[in-house]
Length: 344
Ligand code: FA5
Image 1 (cartoon, rainbow, N blue to C red):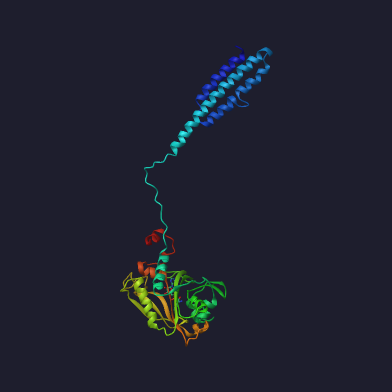
Image 2 (image 1 turned 120 degrees about the vertical axis):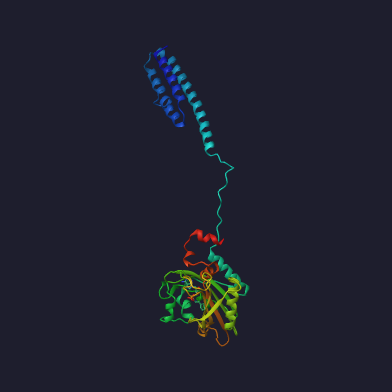
């Protein structure tokens, strides 16, 4: 045995022993670099063959190649077994227990105000009203001027306004601008309802939001009366709430109707005895209404001697509060799912 033979034997013995201790892929790679890599132990030995006597070189080279082949084969065998066990580990980790109960998928739901709006529109559709919509960013002319509220008119204080481009473009403060829009583009008889968002620069409290919905109603024909208006509104309240609902009509002032009134229903939270939602009055105001002012008819080119009309504007948030005895309007847009989920 030459010196190199015994060195190779020790190297192979140690290599095989070390390889047995490699328990993962990374350890096997480190082992490979140490023994079989370009600057590993086998390569070192092969380089040293050049210094042997010429006649010893062939047998030493052959022995080194055999040692290298033994270690390569052992390495491939080990890698194969490590791969198998890491695959087994991965399968084990990914195992799904098909007997476990599944994760519940949560359904989306409609917002309570959407539900109320749909119901309101359904009731008016049944009474022969058509549904239409108008812009939220509105011209001063439609929001005020056409409705008999010229600039500097003190009634403008009733609607604290967000202006987009003062003084002519604003966020509509009510859905009433659609009265003029619809009359301008159609001929009587008219029976429409217009749902939509409104904006007012006002302090929030239990019954006031700065953004809220309204549904506007407008009927124009020959010979309409306050009795028609009250009949429509009571029929609406009876279907929206309950058949015995108590409605109260009182005079109110809006520059675009004459006469004007507001309709309230008995507060369902305190049943009329007074609470913070009804501001101790026992009643909740739902809407403003009245007979369309002759000047509004003239503003859109109608002849007030030939046709007349009635109009109303109601608050779906207030209606939802009455229906479900909710005592704070701010709950609707607070995005608390515990509240919102109760309606679906
Ligand atoms: C008006 O806005 C008139 N355009 C209604 C009208 C239409 C009168 C046609 C005559 C003819 P008022 O500001 O009162 O009126 O508002 C009408 C309804 O909208 C109120 O009764 C209320 O239900 C709702 N509302 C008004 N302001 C708010 C607010 N800040 N938050 C929530 N709801 C409101």
